[in-house]
Structure formats: C-alpha cells, structure tokens
Length: 275
Picture 1 (cartoon, rainbow, N blue to C red):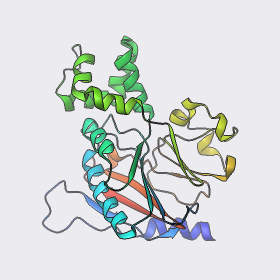
Picture 2 (cartoon, one colour):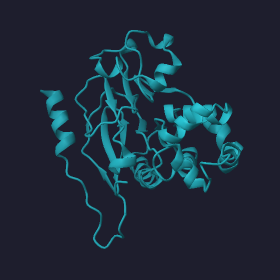
Picture 3 (spheres, helix red, strand yellow):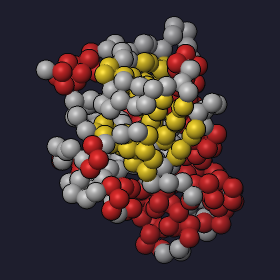
C-alpha cells in the first residue's frame, strides 16, 4: 500500500505552468510533494541527482537555480549534487551543459558521472576509427559539432577538442563512474545485481540495461541505486531499490532531479519545449 501511495503521489502532483506573459520557449520548474525517502541519509545530509541532460543546457540551468533555492531553504550540513552522466549529444547545448555541470551549484559538492555518450565521445576523440567516428555522429554527436560551428563532413576531431578546451576535457575524462552517499549509490546506467558492489565491471556502470532494469532487488549492501540511461516516459517511484531519472530531456523537454534530505525525498523537474 505504501509503494502504491508513493507511486500515485508522484503522478498526481500538478505542474506549475509557465508564468503568464513568459516568452515562448520559457522553462518552468516544479517541485513535487515531499515523500518518504527510498533510503534515509545521515542527519543534515542532502543529495540531489539530475538525470540525463543530452544537450538541454536550458533545462539544466533552470534546474540548478531551483536546486540552489532548495539548498538555501534546507541549509544542510553536507550537500551533494550529482549529474548522472550523458550531458552530451542530441540536444543543442552539450558543451554548455558540460560547463554548467562543472560549475555546479554554490555550496554543494558537485560530482558528474561518466555516461555512455561521454565515453563514446572520448573514444572518437582519442582514436581516429572511421567506423566509430561515423557511429558517434549518428548517435547524437552532430549536434555537438553544430553547437561548436564545426562541419561534420570535414576533419572535425581537432576543432572539437579546441572548442571543448583541454581544461574541460581533462575534467570530463577524470569524472568517476559512481558516487555513494550513505546507502544511496549513484551511477549512470545501473549495476550488475548478481555481483557485490566491490566487483562491479566499470563498463556495466555506464552501459548496462538488462538484467539491472528487470531486477527486483535488493542489491548488495542494501543500497538504493539512483540512475539514468534507460529513458522512461513517466517517472516511477514505486521500485523499493532503484529510481530511474532519465525522462528523455532532449526530446520530451523534461529534465528530472531527485532530492533526498535525511528521511524524505522530493522530485524537481524543469519543463520546457520539446525538441
């Protein structure tokens, strides 16, 4: 009954519309009702995770503003901001999204995880394999080149590295594949439910879908897994051991975050025009 109530509450909370007179394309941000947390964090601890951005820097900027306001209200002793990966590809603002993630939110320890789209972009920048390069372009990479004003039919690897800048690339390559706060584990794709946490394959953390998404859990050490990677049309909070925050922001216009503060959690969502 509790799981059913939590599921219904997530779906029935009304969205706040864009304010009257706002320009076309404006982004509205909503906070849903507080619910019991999937796992309780230590006293005074706030952890906020943001799902797959995929170039929707407009939504990410709005969500960062709302998260800053939330943190200012809660005044936690310890605050974590976790971007779950896949900042790049598909949407029009991949490079801008990377810069926003790197800047984070004032007063919060920002962590950005490597997603499979970042991993593939790093691969083509480092290894000039024509098949991989063409695959990345079809995978959403053309929008990254368009953002940088680079011709995809030319020699684009050098110009793209220059557009990104070595500082941003070094930061992105050094990002971790997981982050843990108490009994909450943040990863991009998921984990192998058959393995202990200490023996997870780094590739699974970035790429896995099945068997993770079909697993009823529980997972090793009793953690709850907050992840993205597998797009969902509607957020589902009914699973007792995992929450998927990938709401296909690049096409749906909905970028979703989950805030966990001590023993409660709240969904935040930036809503803008679909692309």
